[in-house]
Image (cartoon, rainbow, N blue to C red; front, side, top):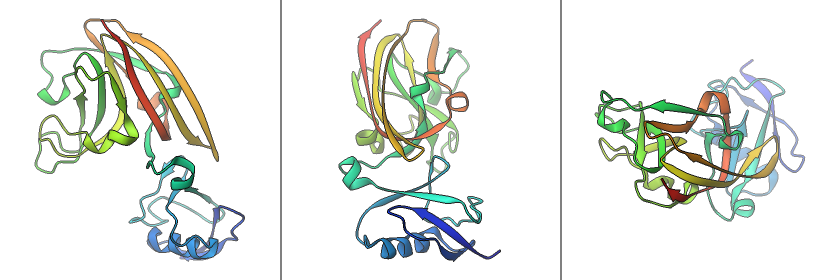
Amino acid sequence: MDEIPILIRFHDIKPYNCKRNELLSSVFEEFKKNSGKLYSKFLFIYNSTILDQNKTLKEYNILQGDIINALEYENVLGGGLPINFTDVSKNIYIEQKFSKKVPDYKIASKGINVIGICKGRGCKAYNQAVICPLKEKKKFNLIEEKDDLECPKCRNLLIPKTLGFYSCEYKIKGKKYEKDNITSFELEDKAIKKDSIKYFDPEKNGNTIIIELIVEVINFL
């Protein structure tokens, strides 16, 4: 079982043998050679997850006959790099009441709030969910601005996971890649409770690959 035929779906490329403990980076380089697109930029996707090329097939439990999809993102997306993110298009949310006992890295502000995981080693919030408040910012482009997001505690890298809103009317417009298709979505809603943050629940909405996500505050309440 060390060597398995793996099918990468893109322009009818035939499956080829690779080792389960082989780094995905070498698997994908072989794919790019076979596809004739050695210098193109791709995202490789399995079960609605963008694969980390520094991991192995075994780490993702990819087995014989499984399909990995290849998305040539420069041509399709105009150069923007998609990310794994909560599928906000399903619009399933939770309203979490504020508490005076929360740490300072879990405090929301009026308007748009990005909820993510702190990756600052040594930070008290390391590997925990934190709230990055965008304060009075009225428009936010997740794909273009994701690298500017910081943990509010240590100011180090934040991996965005979902969105939250407080005391505002807002609208969301985006595109997602799912089941070999790119689909567009739009929604408009409001967060009117003065004692709660309204956020998209990652578990109930599930994960998807966001290609475009633009969030805009219509009115602060």
